[in-house]
Length: 488
Image 1 (cartoon, rainbow, N blue to C red):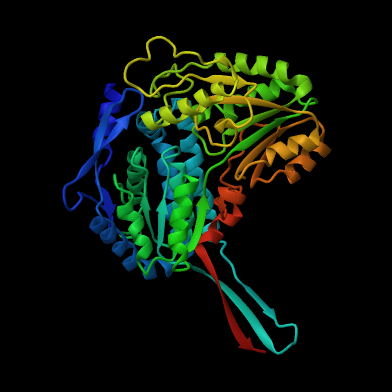
Image 2: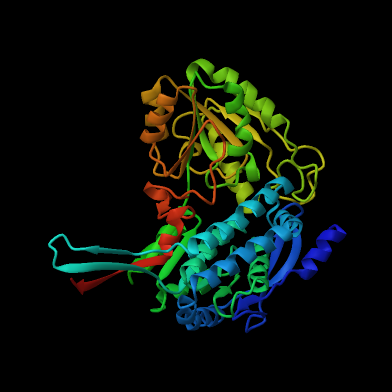
């Protein structure tokens, strides 16, 4: 462990964040945070019990009324100061994320900018919440609507974007006048605790935010039974999200979900093949493929399949696999042994179904240090029935399939229960728009490998979720519309 990382870890809080303070769990319990690059412990973090979680939620409930009455400009200024704080501490946050997630430094640095941007965006949206005033068509009444905060919120976030996933829930909630309790993933709690520290430094009043890391997620999800909870927001696996949403629906809790993906990456024969191959660096290799919007199924028109595959292999071969905190690494390990096992199972099953492996037979030398590494892999000719066609890979694996025409491309792209993101490559803009409109996904990127932007709505259709985060739409998830009827 480098001296820089040791110094950073010594400064990062490891307690629960409740009522503006970092505190131990009542029982003194902790859990280990593991460095995926080495398989060794980075830190011991306080483990919230059900009692601790209730204490944290009590604090946000008690603070709700006063925060809802706080002028929007005051809320906005706190969020903007948080944005500035995060950018001022970009180097520390970059290193911290790469240490606890194993992600390459360049990808972590990009997330700092992305995550911070949610605080700037919603600082601006906080002062633009508006209602409406109009006359009834019959001329007998005035119709007034106002937007009000939905109330105390509960958020659960995943490990793969430990800053941004929290930022795009916390920022709009606070902007709207809501208080919020949040459970970060047990693999990556340190970044969220750093964010809590940033908000405190920016002047966030006590009680508005509780951060509740735990090794037992049931301790926090039990808060879905609390009658004061008015909003539940979750990012994570489809199965877990649906189970928790079903629990929330018993009490009609406002719910938004960002769940799994199975993104198609459609390349037509008239595409710029070089650009389509190079975009794989973002669409698949970012975060070692552990991204919910990562391209999962590469659908390439038959006439260009061989050329596309050859160029993709060359692009990926230029990537260096190594420890997340090493400057020389282009991509790092997976987040844990569980991820390695899952990706291995999917690839082995594909090989059993006749797949040809063009890249990824073995790890580079020197990566046998206990870290959770998986080599970048390219597969073609995967037979029907292979799990890799229908399951989210969450690893650096490119699976290439073919199609004959536009109709078949759309049919294959939509042959999934998921609908989060999609990618289309063609130089025919009429076709690009037709296919983008025809693909069943909440987001479509045309001739590019990335699409996330704090100013744009993020979310999916079908079993990829409910609601939208970011953009003008993002704050609506934390507001209720009230109608006031007045005589004319």
